[in-house]
Length: 607
Image 1 (cartoon, rainbow, N blue to C red):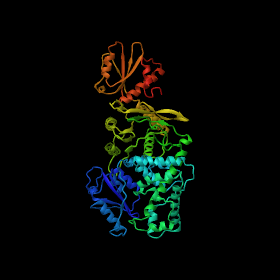
Image 2: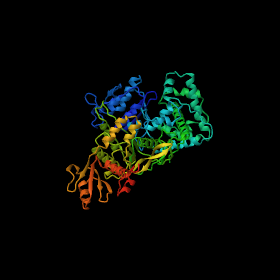
Image 3: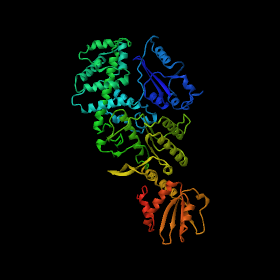
Image 4: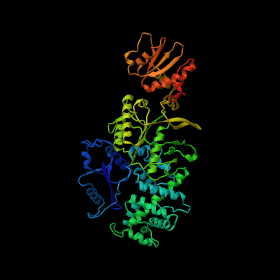
């Protein structure tokens, strides 16, 4: 994997994140604010296949992210060299020390993949509902929003997530007034204090931080919240301070506190740790308080999987259809275009992620495992910069997902293998599903490749069915849906009726062939899917479909007086649909059928 060293010059700290995927590195580069970027020369020699800088700089995802940005190559031992460059850039002494505030990644879920983060709106993406905007009230901005965003992008350990959830539950039940939770950028304040440029307003904000922490400590209802806030604050700052040491009954005068801040970072009494820790604690408190307030308004719950709704719908306003999802293995999801498959996958991904972070979720009830990773793949676009087609991009993401999946992962894939021809795409999709099933992960794979159901797969089948809620809408049901509603979707989107009519003609432009008494099907029917109509001596029709037309013809010719008509169609899925259509509509034209009941158990058979 990749290693990322982050240095905060104002705080004289650095942290190390190792074993990151290329996607995780790109996500961090896209979300963190940095003034200088240094790339180690080992990237030029990468043989992993995921990053190819090469002689002319062309490459993959990481190269694309860095391309156009100002960066500098460096050699040697990464931490020593990066800290040396920082000292040189900011005119610091060679012996200026930096504290290592790295938090162990052991038992912590992997950072969110870039594709997952963009497709659930954790990162701003055009056309995707913003997850951040529904987690917090509209008037909550700045540092609390950044904290929630970073929490989602880098989910915490189970213990920290459980602590965050307990804090939120206590906040939801508090009856006493709450502090305003003054949000102060500790890095900015430290820099101003070092330069002796702090004005009256900034001194007042520092005093507010001290007063509010003191208020929580002295209030018996708020003190448990303060004590639990220590853990997530430690995860964010890399500094661990005991609550009783942080706040004492007799505070030092604020002037002495501020004066102490300008002492050396290495000082044993360096009160800068107090200021940094306290300001971050209040930022987290404000973020969680705002989240609980918005979650209560939206009638969200704390997860303890089942009744879920899209996160961008406001259940409190009554505009959401609730769906039940119990996931014990891999699920294959089918449904028409616009039937809610993508919304279902985004919703489950968001709920799992929020639960892993200890936050409230848009559900009536939820029991969520603490996954080691959550991966969502939606539709892919081509990348001209990398010279890759949309299918190549999709396969690259599939490689990352398969290599990163464990039995404790959640994998969600929308319309798998949509970018290539149907037959090979179906088999490739089936192979990927088999591998994911063998790994034992939980997940959902949605598809329009209906021939996949003829493959020997073990996944459970779910479909999007119709439910009336003011207007017809979609709800998750058991089974398979092979109806795409493609023509209806095109008509709703304003495509010319002339185009749609011609499409319907082309769809039905199959050749009907009559087979005489002493005739047999031509060789091109071997292994091909077909629908056949059998006219019996009693003038009744039998409708069927088969991939072995010659064998079916021999079986029926054992009875004399039978007439045989067949139609070749592209695939077993269409054969099933056409058989159902004929069984349900021929009686309306006055024909009598012997197997009319067969149309009742087909998908969309009665529609």
